[in-house]
Image (cartoon, one colour):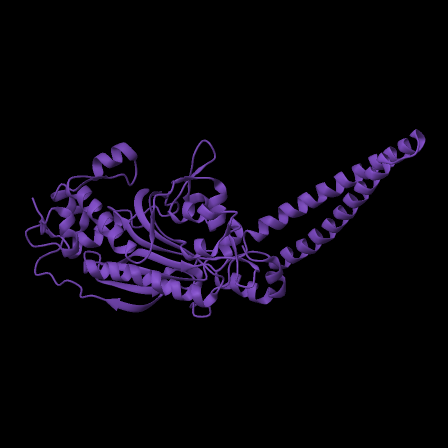
Length: 423
């Protein structure tokens, strides 16, 4: 959420941000509502002051006649105040509804565009494998090696269900263990957050109200988080952080993740590309309210994941997301996409974003700067690694002519020293 004063002072900038992000929010209506909100609030506060004065007068009345007269007048005042408060409540509801739709302003370096097809490649790493045989896709490879069962997964879960089994399960554990070792050495503190969260956490991160169709809801009106960013950001909600807490607010959170993948029927549906339930390690950072510091950490978080992928020796490229492919709160985002040989394309594996104080205003996460002024912290997040999606590229890039798959060297110590997965 942006500061309403910032919105009012920069109406043209906010309108341009909405245009770039293809948001239909009505900024002029918001300003009009804000004027009405201030006017109604002024009237309510004035009436409340009158009511307090009247209450004191009743308490000090010299006789019953005077007291009854004051009580009668105060009753009328109370009725007027109630009517004015109801008007203010309605205005505040409309005001909040639009405020939740106002997008953050993209960084100047973010290219314009409508969809992920307009994202711009700026880095390519690794050599794509050249096979002297007809390569298989990850589905065929993993089924032949008894690593996955999609048929029974669908029977148990439904559409996009899967069982990872045998070396499929072991390889997932190996990736998690290696990722924990790798990313904690980057100064991140490991955390296991809850995956069932209150609605307020999803509003805080900006996933609600715009992504409601993609989120699982429980019968108790709680929600299943689609990323560990959601509960991790709620960790310091409504708190004023000490300097030490802010300096150490660098987390590596691991959790199951749940996404309905609404609207993606028929898109990337095969195998492990898009599933409803998966696991993910997420990097989350809070820092001082400095654009320069946010940019520095953004580059650092994205580079952490690039280095991790490079250590696995999987070819990838990194893109800068266009404005139309940014979330409501994101100032800038990078996507890392891994090469998938059978499809001859890159598939997203990680996103790194920074938000300035968009999320922390919603969560009310603050700190005092060196001058003692209260400030909202800045927030950032980046995927460390998701499973099982990373298995798609890993299986296909490291497959051999005999149907076996070579295990990346850095994972072998977590796989009992084995070099291959084979029948």
